[in-house]
Image (cartoon, rainbow, N blue to C red; front, top):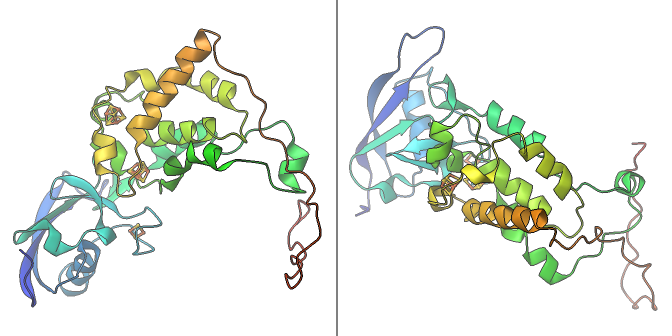
Length: 278
Ligand code: SF4
Ligand code: SF4
Ligand code: FES
């Protein structure tokens, strides 16, 4: 149970510098933590007081940038979004996210995850590039259509789901929950027309069929995204497409010109500040 004053906690940290260290080692440092302190705050204390060369990756300190994913007491979590008090006990064990290489200490090498993410084209694919480069109006989308992909769009690409996935751990060809979840996020978007192109990319292997749907990825996601669900929806869409039952709707068109009389007292929108030319 969380106390009301400062207490001393041992940070047990996995240190490793490829190219210099022959193998990882564990270090322990005791620091004073106060109520409300996060694991990230604790790492800063350890670095300032005991281990100046300790390396990790973080930026926003508010669960937005996705850079501080670590294995904390055996579970992938965001260090900035995990309070020491919520872990219980007097030992906080921190290592780099598993299922990735290590750049140094607590810094995972997320390069392969982002390469797969990029290969699956996580953006709107359409056949009106001129409108995309220099938009005239918004694309039309109903609240119901937004609902189909909204929760998947909360992903911050932290890699915690990849670190928890048993298939990623054992199959180097599997794309993994983050890239697949984000591919499905765009496949589900009524403004997108890229289903076929993403399907072709996945046909080389690594697609959703390797997922066992055990759901570890969704359980550890710090943003409440459900990549396991996205992957099952992708499987469904691929089967329906294979059976030629998938409705082929063109991507949503641009919205109509605004009509009606502008309401009094509402300022005109400001002029655009950027164009395709820059
Ligand atoms: S789905 Fe969740 S755990 Fe996975 S990368 Fe996105 S935010 Fe992180
Ligand atoms: S549900 Fe699929 S993607 Fe998620 S952890 Fe399990 S095998 Fe991996
Ligand atoms: S520092 Fe940005 S999510 Fe933790």
